[in-house]
Image (cartoon, rainbow, N blue to C red; front, side, top):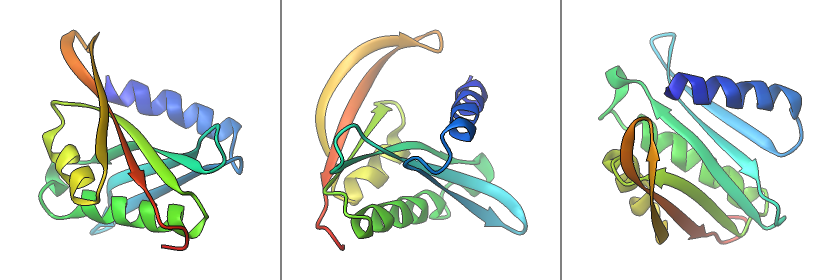
Length: 131
């Protein structure tokens, strides 16, 4: 199911390349082990963090943390004042990374996806421009 989401996002990415979408990939021993995407928001001061993925073999090695650091550094240098993201409460490792970088939980809402009852969460981080 995650592959379907990523495939759909990749197709959309191909259509809007150069229009406010940036992506980073992490590699280890020549293999891709993670990725993250940053998308310009409707408000020119806001960017949205999308699709933080780390392969099971690379989890616990700091790959997710490094990807988020790169993404946020870029967002600050690009002049964004705020970064938002949406995730599910069951993604505890990702949430710990977001919290460690200063993201604050804004709201939660139950939903049903992937055959499960989940709680979606919106998070936000205020950036210092030129960070």
